[in-house]
Amino acid sequence: MKILILILSLLLSLGALASRVEVDVNGMSCSMCVEAITKELTATQKAENITVKVEDKKAWFDEVKGKKITDTEIKTAIKKAGYEAVKVRRK
Picture 1 (tube, rainbow, N blue to C red):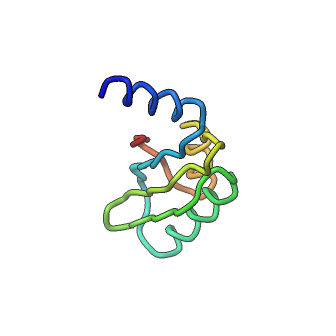
Picture 2: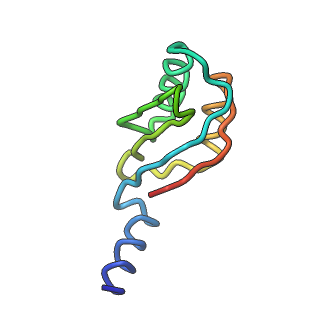
């Protein structure tokens, strides 16, 4: 089991497997917020399957396989949309 976890961790770190990302976002209040954040995350060309929920104040997406997106890139994209990425988690 430990070997499997080690292999999966190594593959994730090398970008061989895409990871799911969850971001806490401040400042969202309407559907226009959802559209703006989705647009900017898509523009990075490193995020896909994007879901943004105003009521949860969160955005979720998958990294494009082989294209690791940094926390800085995520925060910059969300800031460009007019909001603040408070916390980024990878699963």
